[in-house]
Length: 456
Image (tube, rainbow, N blue to C red; front, side, top):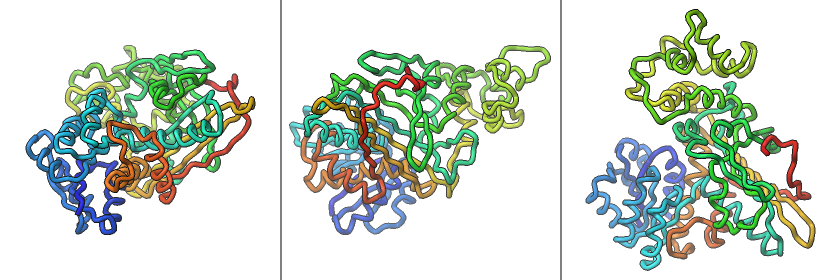
């Protein structure tokens, strides 16, 4: 039996584990699933004969090393900053490794050692990053192979609630780490290139500089800028491209409403609130409003934000119960962002039988034989339920497929790498199509700059 060690059995591991167990007999696999919570790991094995659940604390160095040494390949589904110790052990014990996380500088520093030991350390092989890389490089490579020159690349992705489970005014529920949603856009200005000009959007403007996207059968969406759209310019070979922009997808109206929290200061994570464990949601809201001897919290907030009582923005705030004087925060030494996350989790948690949705949208502008053209590539994936979500599917399946491809010697280029080579993306994208994760590509005349778009 070939032993696959999976470290971390959280939400994103559901579809990953299911896939590998379904292939365990034909591929001669045994899964060792390690998590801090033995009960969680046991739930994910579901009593399968080819799986063993263990309690695993990666900070227990000897246990970590022992389990890695026994494995043929290691999948790390840990938080990104915890991968590095696992990766170092993989180098020592000569084991391949797969993660869905962004490549860190510390991980990149292991590239030479990985190559020297003929090891594949595959990173960024989830959804975003992951499927975005593979689907983009497939089209970019095809354009280049027929003699085209890239002039525009825009890429958008979003985890949303599926239409049949969309039952709140925000048209949104958490399908991934809530903290990342609350802190989205922070840490510096959004940076991109448009028509050959560098553009910067400061955090307090990000959610008001959006653009509209149409996806057939699913309606209209909006996109706001990711922090650094230029990170993959050289990776994709797009150093000379005139427009390069990466963004996050939401339903129309979300960004304008979210901007209320940004303007109030509720998304700040840089300080803690005194006595945060004892204050109510209403008291928390009032912390960010000016004092007035007679005006209510509701009146002060409407005046502060410049919204009327019959505005849909007001209805969205009321729906979140932020004026409730009886609900207590209950978090010790919490930042505003942490408290906001707690409040939102009350309303935005995906229920057991509800479904989520992933939407990805690429735009490729290129010139060939003096003619400018555009390809739009769109993907929509709907989840099954609260456990087997579209997010778990689109993150976990590429990780699982890549793991088997490496084990079987089909992916063999050694080193710390991303899934941008044909040996990686072609077989994985082809197999993902059998699971309903497929892109619809349409070609049309190049649109180029459109002054009617909000983003400028």
